[in-house]
Image (cartoon, rainbow, N blue to C red; front, side, top):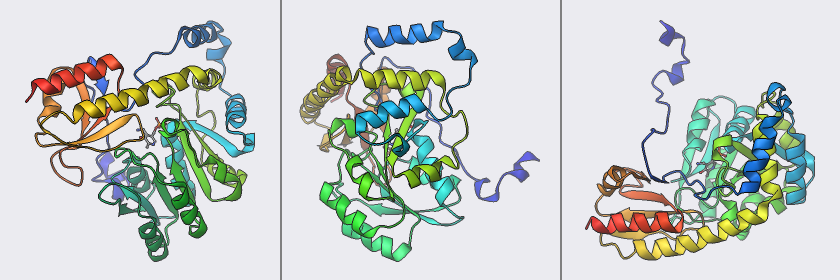
Length: 352
Ligand code: PMP
């Protein structure tokens, strides 16, 4: 039986696959709700018209995209690595640094991929709780670091799904102590106009992960990247397969970044929409709490969880976390366009 050949630790493993649901309004995956402008679309069409672009393998080292990113972040090209979504970098870091059963420190609640990728790479996830208001307790992380001797430490800022950030001061404290790879995931960093990338030049063990999936609206093309010391980038490259990132993704990510002013305006709009959405959610009786957020989503706690299904029946998707566990009765709502947010609030108010 083929099952007998599966790695023993994966025999009972249940892989996560996001369910496919029909919708009119999609507020469940933190995507950018605005369309790309005509210029980007016409560049994409032009690119497709040159059939060499499809026939030839992509640049395995993503040279042009890395050059554009290096210029954007004022680092050297050798400090940049591109990947198939930042998910691939999360996996690759663990692949290259973990021996079986090595420990990995990660926040909870946070992005589920840290734990999943750790397990798939035969490591042991060690989760540290965030404070009640979801802020980071760096002293707790430092104590755990001394006790557990992890091989990698993850920080997510703004944290998904809670929306809180870690302060610059706290990152400095961590960097003073932590010697193993420290991975700061800034998938939603564009919404705070701040980055820890500036610290990379002084810390060989720091890597900052970014993505084109969120603020830059390219989730369908799967482009992530990391900024780190040359030695960190060289280490990850050991396990990145050749020709990993397709040519269209490389080209469009570059095009989007070269037109970043357009996206900056959309980011500002989403931040304004977030305030409107938060204010309006707070007026709904069964919404017990709206957590403050620095990202393009809001985490809320409700007294009646059936609203998730009610909205789904109205073809509005949000991300519910179930009625059990540390996020019991919590729902993450991606900030949509003005119109989408109004429709959401209208439906939520009907259900009183
Ligand atoms: N990090 C965080 C915190 C995320 O929320 C996500 C997407 N949900 C990712 C990384 C992965 O993004 P991608 O692979 O699309 O770049």
